[in-house]
Length: 261
Image (cartoon, rainbow, N blue to C red; front, side, top):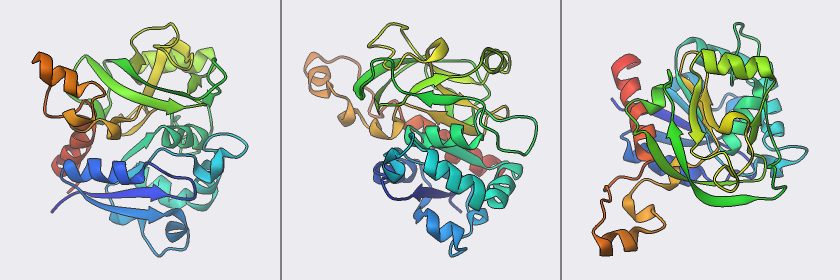
């Protein structure tokens, strides 16, 4: 039996196809599901082991990035989400999905079942949309999705509100609990494209089963996605057949196979 992944979509979602392909490459059964099908009980979240919230501009990022989808999830899917988390299932939010998880309070999480927002993803310090490939440093963390990921990875970013910021006590808690998963390898712009506190590019909850990041792992699944793959081939530089992002999805699928099926 293959792990089942629900890829949540709504108006403005635009990275669902890439996320779908990533989980298929990793060996999962996938379903692209509109949020209204969950709200109306046409689809049961409990039938899946992984929930993925892809990138894009949900509801046009009206008011603030991801906030309308977050409110919808928080108030219309409360019981389903709480049960999903209590059952130890996996959640990943990428870019807009990370914004959604932070605004629901699922990230960074707290000691209660209440979803309370404790951090945010604010406008980039450049005050503009940033789209480029960046180097990330993998941190020692509990994150299920990054087990065995190499020390430095290369992934693209594409966002306007990607600056992770939180009160000092929350940042200290993230560090103490090893919840910081990825940092931008350099602190100065443009290598830190948004000015995030402590160069944070991705975090997990205290269990390591809920993961959010601004860079897009689903956009680097094979070497052909690398922006300089033709040069690497010509110069015979080392270029793995797999892109740096694929292992994140494989780790999730393998975790489910070992622990939830």
